Length: 231
Image: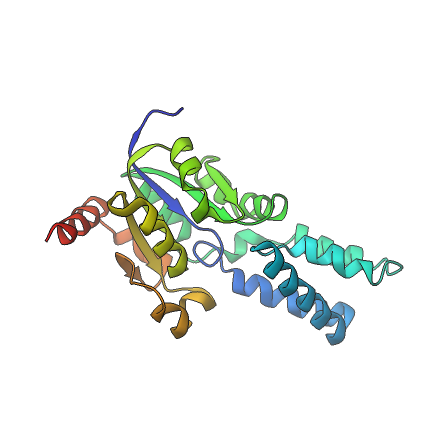
């Protein structure tokens, strides 16, 4: 077991550090231009069905299922190449790496993400995020259900979670309670959906963009959150 840190800061990946909505848009445009609108719609229908089954986005799994209905089409190899070779580093939000470096001055930083075991690590590596957190990357199907293992791998007196989904932040807060400070960047379609936002309690800190965290005084934030809870 690692020695205990004072603070560990976890960052989600998709729509927190990396603009995954733009990645999805680019994939839609690629599928439409290379395979036609009907094929594009069929792929996304398979994708959404698979996500409902698995609980996470599986781009390559959806492609494999798509292929089952069109196995003679060798051009599908172009579709997989688009995903594997996608320039994810160009889709990082402005200031994402700066935010990681800034918060590293007060605690250990790591990526804590949901996703599959092949494409999600590839995305995190090619984007430069893997190197930015020096390989401290955890990927689960449902990360909020794995907090005991997360705490075992990264024991700390206090945790910070930066995530674009209030649902995830609320679930983690229920488990870790006062040991957790939550930060909500209002980026991506989940964070900008009024229904999603109104369904959960607010985070301890809300920022308009991930780059705003370069101005965050993390010790002061943690202290203020603790003070509010003792009143």
